[in-house]
Amino acid sequence: MPFGISNEQERETAMRTCMANNGRSLWELSRQSTLLVVFLRHLGCTFCQEAVRDAARQRADIQAGGATLVFVHPATAEDAENFFAKYCMNDVPRISDPSGDLYRAFGLDRAGFREMLNPTVWLRALASIAAGNLPGRPRGNMFRMPGAFVVHEGRVVKSHFHRTIGERPDMANISAEGMEACRI
Figure: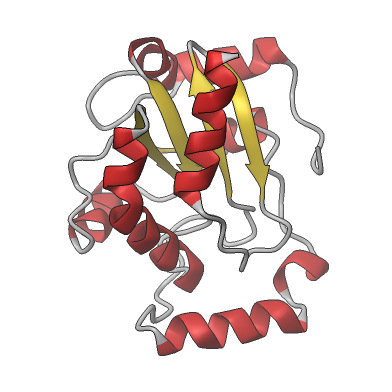
């Protein structure tokens, strides 16, 4: 794993203490349903806007496969309310994590030069902006790396660590692979 994931006890503690906007902890949510947990960099990020748009488009496939979508972001709950409403994703559980406890517990570290400022990222940024994902005011830690994880009964069964901030993974595929791992 690229950023040295914390131990299972640290992750469990963070999952039990970080609450979603619906008043339930990530741990509790994962005991009720298998989750696709999508960690966003910051809500002003063009790639995060793209990720939420992609999740909105793939939401039916993710849910049909048996997973529940959850977002983790570093902004305030108020900023998130407005942000997710733009994408008709306000009903999706989301966790405000400005301290970065969940990010660290899942092994998502700070982005370095290679993850943020390479030519591939800049080309991806231009494509994302051309698609209508205009960069906004950073709301949260803009140096945080994104990622996606399938969590089943408090356990991570599938991890996707972004190689760069501009990577655009197929969330429905990550979810499907994680659901398959739950059946094994």
